[in-house]
Image (cartoon, rainbow over all chains, first blue to last red; front, top):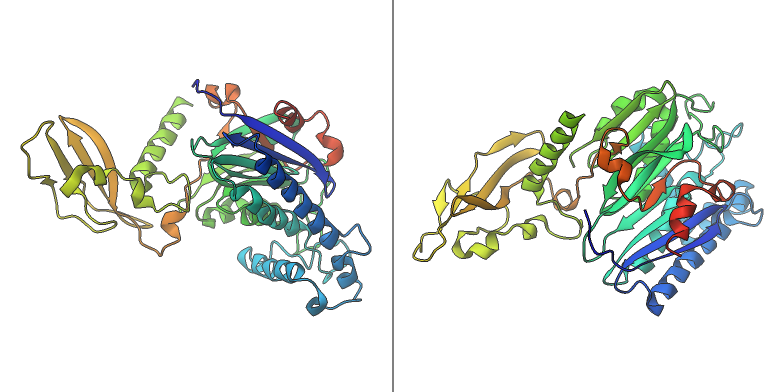
Amino acid sequence: MTRTAPDRRAWVEQIMGMPISVHVRGAGARDAATARAVESVFADLRAADAMFSTYREDSQIRRLQRGEIALADCSTAVREVWLLCGTALERTDGAFDAWAAVPGSPGTFDPTGLVKTWAVTHAAGHLRALTGLGFALGAGGDILVKTGPDQTPWQIGIEDPRDTSRVLATVPVADGGVATSGVAARGQHILDPRTGEPATEILSATVIGPSLLWADVFATAAVARGASAVDWVQGLHGTSGLLILTDGTVHRWGNAP
Amino acid sequence: MRRIIVALGTTATGLVLLFSWPTSWNRPVAAGGQATALGGAGTSQGTAATGASSNGSGSTAPVTSTVDGAVVQTPYGNVQVRLTVADGSVTAAEAIAYPDRGGTDVQISNYAIPILSQEAVQAQSAKIDMVSGATFTSRGYIQSLQDALDQANL
């Protein structure tokens, strides 16, 4: 178990109302180029927040929602996210619906559920460009990792939604994303698109896969879907994960690609 | 509980045999195999071999031979593994046939199934690098486990 720990460094900033943690591991952890790359990550995420925040009345998304601008007037980024939300709707059989995410306002486009991991995936490009370095980029509980030259996987703990001071499970991840969605402390914030009501059957869904964005979409869809997600996740090729149901049942899976 | 761990281990071993456990999905899977070190014994990636063979030239020690396993049909396609045996010990295992469903599949890693904390002793003591959860907000972050992990490395 003992190994020489590679040099390691961490940064944290609060962006989009959540902590963004960057950990790097490897020989270049203290290089100026690494610090610059991390600062670029934070800068990209702040820019995405300005564009997509539903809390900022002047964001493109709010203006789009109010009908002041059309989709064609929006930035490439907003249009890309719009298209991804359409793909997510299809890939989850309607369980992830960015047009049914605002309570009492069906049809209003709110891509908040996808923007975070979309922005993180783009921003992580600054870290991927660094050679000889592994990184873990955590954004409000969703994590993107890549190993360095030593190829030691990152050990990711999965929080217990019933006792958030406790880690329910751990999973080693070398290269990919870990996303967790759930009702938890922020309240029942995932709606079942079929009923418009908050989803309640799944306390927390964690999906691990090659893409953080799709892991997050699938985790959100699993919560929205409720107990039937136990069967549904079997069709998510190349992923593993964990579902914690309200009745205390814990379901785990690991699917071949 | 021990049985589950063993089962997981067996699965992992099988996957290593199948896919050489690519730790990066940008790396071609077969490149992880060690057959290239065997001179003539290696075949080109993904080409099915024709039964057991030895690497012929055979004049120098140690005695190395390769053994091809049976073609196994799986829901994902046919799989065949080649073992390299040197002086009676298996020194390498390489997938010589694996499910061919286009370029992307072989590049995708398999992901480990999360290990429940009460299930494996190692998990309790395992060093955790980051925490995934649905509750993370700026307010809840203070004094969270993630906060502690960050502080330890700032």
